[in-house]
Image (cartoon, rainbow, N blue to C red; front, top):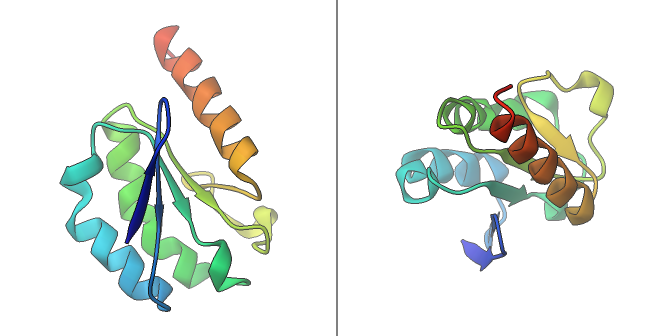
Length: 110
């Protein structure tokens, strides 16, 4: 796994070629980044099936419960088919913007 630290979040990307293994791995090690906002880069996998994306659902719930953001970056996923519990955006900039908005909401008590 490749990590890249930013000001208020960390980017996690897979160095292998199996999105399911990557989701399982992140779930196993989620304590390592539970106190950080996380962007998961799965752009290299191209078009994913919804069940593959749902493998990140447990991570998303855990981060929301811990008052942190988790955003997935992939530009081929049909956003309309994605449940509200998972944030998927097509670019890093949109991921950063979404994290910023969620931080403001948390600061305001929403």
